[in-house]
Structure formats: C-alpha cells, structure tokens
Image 1: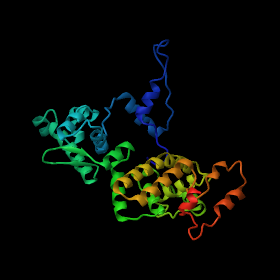
Image 2: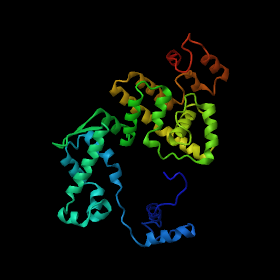
Image 3: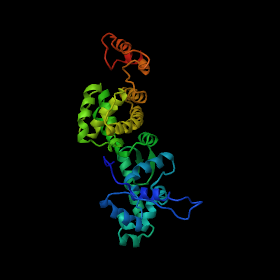
Image 4: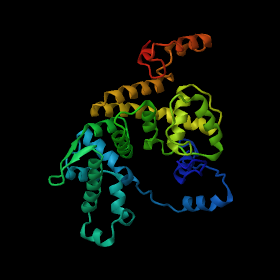
Length: 330
C-alpha cells in the first residue's frame, strides 16, 4: 500500500514477542527488537503504554452491507443497525465516540448510539443505491438486492470499482479488447500498485515488446502499469525487476477474478459482445495464453518455435489477425 519498505506495526511486533518462551516449560521469555534509533523511541512508547486499537470498518461499510443484503441477513435499515451492533466498530464507538464523529451531547442524548448507527448504514445504503448495487427505499427503509450487487459480493469487488465499471461501460457501448483490459486495470483492487521512477525504463520496454493490445493509459499511472504487466504475464515474458515481479504476481492473482466479475456484469446488462471478449480475456489470464494464439503453446518446451509461428501465421481469408474468432477456436 505504501509502495516501499515500512516499519513493522506494533501489532506485528507484539505478535512476534508473544511467541517468546515455551508455555509448558518456561515461566518467562525474552525477545530482541532490532531497529533504527529514530524508530526506537516510538516502539518503546507503544510497548510500554497500551493504546486501544480503533476500527476502520466505516471505510468498508458499504461493501460489507452489500454482502449482508445479498446473503439475506439484512433487508431493512433497522436490521442493518442491529447487525452493526455486533461489530467491533460499535464496541469502539461506544468506548471512544469522539474518534467516530460523536460529540459529548450526542452521546448523552443517545447512549446506545442508535442514531449514529442509523446514519452510517443509511449513508452506505444511499451510496450502494447510487451505484446500482442494491435498491433502497428511503420511505420504508427496505433494502433489495440487485444483480450488480450480487456479482460484486460473489467476486469480492469493491463498491468503488463497481462505480468505475459502470461509468466506463456506459461511455463505451461497444468496447474493444484494449478498452476492456483497460477497464479491468482501472479497478480499485489495483490502486496499491505504485509507479516507481526506477521501473519506468523496464515497463516501457515491456510495453514495446510484449503488449499485443493497445495500452490506453500512460505507464506513469497505476492503470497503465497494470495493463503492461498483465499483458506481459499472459505473454509469458520474463520480468527482471524484483518489485515488478511482485507487482505482476499481485496483478495476476486478482485480474482473473475482476475479469470474470466484469463478464457477469456485461451478461446482466445484455452486452453479449463485451461479455465474450471479457470471457476470453479471463481465460487468457488463467492459462497464460492469448486467445488468438494456438493452444499448442502449452507445449512450448516440447515443440520447436517454428511450429507455433507456422500455425499462427496462417491467413484465414480477410479475417486474419488477433481478433479472428476462427483463429481463436482452431
């Protein structure tokens, strides 16, 4: 997330220190912390003085609320408020209300914080309704699942990504393969892929040598970098930089899931052309073979390279090229 090396959090340090000693044999244990001088005071302060762990659930409340609606456990705002009382967020909100936007007067008037809980779930429901992930009736407070919300829940797609997909698909009624792979790479799931200046040279080289589809975004943006690394992964191109290898593995582990979610979304929208393109992109990510290449590339180690060139250079009338459906199924 930070795009570089960071110090261990105090939670990780406490977890490691907790392993010191053998409970069945020793009465105490010893742990050694090796760090820099500027971080030593911070670690000692947190080790000696206990600091409560606050909840960050509010940032992801919309995604979890959508999952509960899809699962059928929440159908109204009141049920959503009741569900929220079982979370760690509610526990910390009652203990430390100031950290969650509740002042002393509000706490005195509403000790159980039902009003604040209702405000949180209502805002999340309105956000999901705007993104067509559920249907929210403000008058009755009823929450109803939609196809888009069901797909997002099943494939663990963030609400921000769904909003991005909706906007980009609406602006491109008949997207090309390059457009669709760009949409995949614009997902919020890839926002943690940072662009580092020292990597730009190798990324530009990969873009020129192993990207059969046009890269719609500049490589200085995370979506452009993701598009290049994803195409390099499918093309089985060797990446040299350690950080790029790490980023490629992260992109490859998520791209198939995002592509299949987009495929389901296009099916629900009735966009058959985009759906079939997304399906073959998803299959290409899974098998690391482009759909316009021969399936015999699975045996690259056993067959000579000229065999693949001969098979893939066949001209099928006027429909030759990477977008030939006949070449994809031959």
